[in-house]
Image 1 (tube, rainbow, N blue to C red):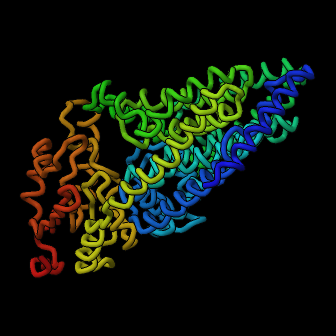
Image 2 (image 1 turned 180 degrees about the horizontal axis):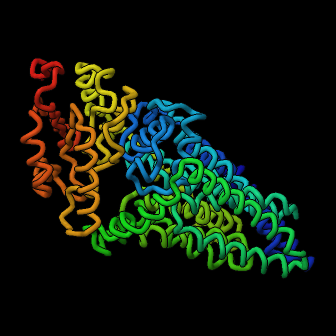
Image 3 (image 1 turned 135 degrees about the vertical axis):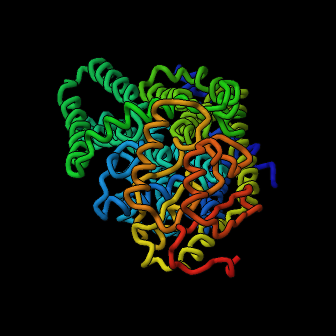
Length: 539
């Protein structure tokens, strides 16, 4: 690298600053417009970030549809065949989840690749929204934030793909882009979309309702300070929020599910909220990915030096980060996807503050900003790409179960097969074969818990009544046991009545184990006296 051009560049910068001081010009304003780092630095950062996002797609596009996403797929399939949410289908996810996920299924399709495309599209939307938000400061912060989120998200593995928390984080990011642009351009109508989107996010998880109220208060104060009438803006925001509420209510009324949702929200949801074996220390330790833990202290120093509280937008971004932390802690599960709203907004706030620090006159502050951006990009991107490339995602479980059910004959299993599984992949197998179940029981969360409760007794009794009313010819039992590792079929001993029912009414046809996939396994029980084929030959 030739040093003479760089020396000449810095000498010109010094002469300009000296001349500005002699003329009485605000030297800080001049310094903000001067480039205190090599010209190749920003293109290098942008290129590495763009390449990182492309490689995330290349490394993960073959990941299978597993975990919670397959439950949403199957539930949408059941609803399209006349099942009533929260009444025929026992599930506690709020209606916003099924509206958003159902829309995505109709747009992208239901295949594994389609769902990966949906995941990539959400990240791309978040990147574009981040660039819009960061444009008055430095657009590169939007790319920096979106790619860091993509990397840390992919590092969580296939099970976290397209989680509702990711969709909710993307919705909030787009809401912020519209909100900021509405006030920047002085166009009240632009608050209709964020009002609607914020309402949909709250219809997925109500933990972000306080954020919406706080943003309304901040917007009101900002408009008052600028001597701009606030009522048109508030009216448009409320109109958007009311339209999302009307959509959710219409969905529930259309399916006759309002009463069922209220009942489940009063029974299953409070019980699930207290189900966690993680201590506060464990939950706190997992609050941030590794790279963000390194960047946060540097970002806080930059924010203090930048006087970021003087601009309402950057405190609003920090408020979204704190709201994400609140949502993470109040759920008290410590799952990686519960932190997605926080880990999507935090790198955006950090990126803005660090890139602004790179244009400050203080050398140490410029060095801090450039060093932190380099750390997140030139160290963080390769670090996470190596980890992501090593993640195995064969998912032999679902294809094996699909093959076994195919041998039994899918056409003979309509309304005659029952999954006793949480999220291993039994519902994904039924979804692929388009098989309707014998009952609407979704997940065995309540059936094998170790915490006694009237809620558990009630839903066990309900499931037994469904089995008696329509005895399935095939029952698939997995060894997944909520909050218990390693997985084990010993979970059946937590519900002796069901274990007795299986032993007396059914024959164990086969057991399949997948040691490479964290010890996942399933058992296939055939009802005594059925004429279905013998599967022993397929073992």
